Length: 482
Image (cartoon, rainbow, N blue to C red; front, side, top):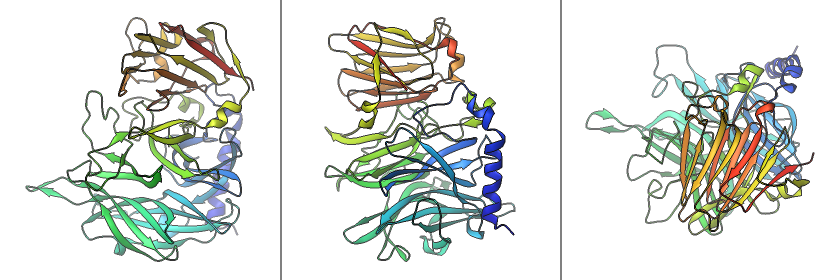
């Protein structure tokens, strides 16, 4: 008789096999990005390099294109560009994760992988699932090959959290430092302001000597309320700086800040400054959330995010849904610090692709990856148009301002945006360099060598795939020949 895990994974593989031909014929599939073989993908999980191979796990719902969790999908790569899909490694098959195997991370030590994740339980009944009705457990499994997992162990339960925390505690990121192990968790702290509930987003940091027994070490709290929940926290050192990455939910939108429903950003921590004071968004585009970083065997700090945002179906949609799948992860990005900003650029492996330069500043493209490199010295403004005049994405660069807009020549919404409209980004000084990557249905923009990033999905039919750059004569367009 099959175990519950075997039965669930067999269901996933049956869904993958049943829709394989339909998915492969989809015009929006990419070459160099992690995608679900079928259904829904969201948060990247367990990012690491293990036994020389890059491992990416992700939230995966093969049975429902509109999400719902239930699995950790798995892809591997030797170069961070060419990804090979593996079978799912985790599913909700025990009492502590019956409502979902939520996000988590990987720790590599002594030739073994330790995976930590949140097991979620939503009890049936009339609950608000904030204070009551939800059980959040932190779970651990181990693996010697990255694919076959041990039995699950509960390492933290509701009794281990501070009394003033709600049941929303999740997304463990685990690392080793100075001979001890640390786990940071996103949390939602109960808070009342003159009788009105105004919960506070925060992070909890636990410490352990053996990776199994954990106790609370300290809390990371903002001086001023900064969202009601912090998801997907990450805490790491980068070039001598202590960086806290987190996703605050509940921030009020501003004209050129917090433009998405939920935000992802970071703070460089100091003793004098609370995390919300120095908060800077990772990506100013339409589609970016839940990033996670890891250090590879070369010592690089690499970030991968989800090219999506939760709960946006009422705002815009992904046209790949009609083909049975939805979402992808971003291109892996190398991090560095310059002038107090964490800059991010595509991993250097991208340069190893076989690139062929196009003539001029206009061309058509198909399913190959395209790279646009523009230098803005002496240029007051430039337009990069991707698509046709009636259905296009325009990237307008002027002085220190970058606008990404899905508007056609008549100013009407472009169908290729699926309802997306416009996003604004700004740099500390006038724009000098622009790098645009296009991999079929995703556009990723890097400005001033990674000071600013903007990511968006785009859905152009093959007959509509053209590029035209205006106002910037020092521009080169390249295509990857693979």
